[in-house]
Image (cartoon, rainbow, N blue to C red; front, top):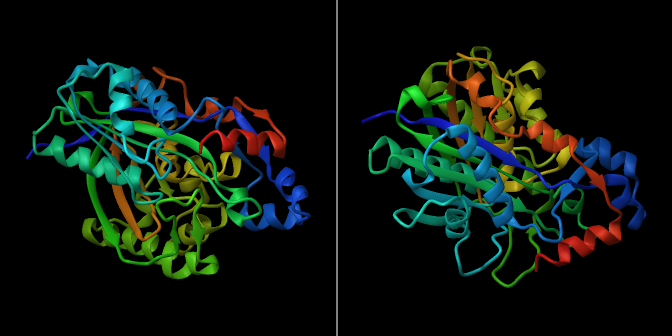
Length: 348
């Protein structure tokens, strides 16, 4: 069986932002305690003409710019999200049409809360490794929604990342060394079919859900490969807020120097299916050749996917071929709460 690795990567984050204080003032809540508790200052908001499909298309275009391949060679497109614009009609075919893939490809939308994007990466990697396809495109993107006044309103954000996977080592920016998952039926967060916004189980979303799965998955891949936390140059965890990943990373023995490049939540909020993938994208845009990267996602319901990537000599060259995640983070314009709700209303 051949290998698999990332040959192209790209991100997209809308320019609109709302500060946590702007939300807190509407509900007469203490902004300082919220920002310190969640370790978040502001979040990204989709524009009136933006949704998961448009975010996915732009991220895919950036990934294609770095991959430097004919898009018609892509044999699979998977888009992971919990905010697909259509309940019945795939986002993946919209992306395929927009980037010029043609028609000879398989496509599907995936859903596993915030890890639907990394599940798509595993699917694409499997098809590439088995040589069923030459290249596969995996995307994680969301325009995350919450009910007004809910704690999620401070973090639910918009953005996404795309990765093109292939088997030719001479094209890889980062080779996939190992991946595995840890899953269980832990209902910490859900949205029924006709509900506009999700519900969550409060503090239950912490210990039995996020912490158990993300830490166990990480421990399993370390045990399987024999690596120690100190063996990695970068580590990225799913980031529903700034507090949760920091607690787990420190508990497992990782240092701030290892995780700060991929911890974006304080600047843009929780982009759900895009969160850990945007973190990986940011890391790939700043890493050097021959560095080791660990990624563990988390999706409510519940599960985690862990990956180990090794950057190659080709990575530095690819970094400059598309707009970087940091550029999107810095490109911002603030809106007030009324404008924010107006933007979100257009998604329903």
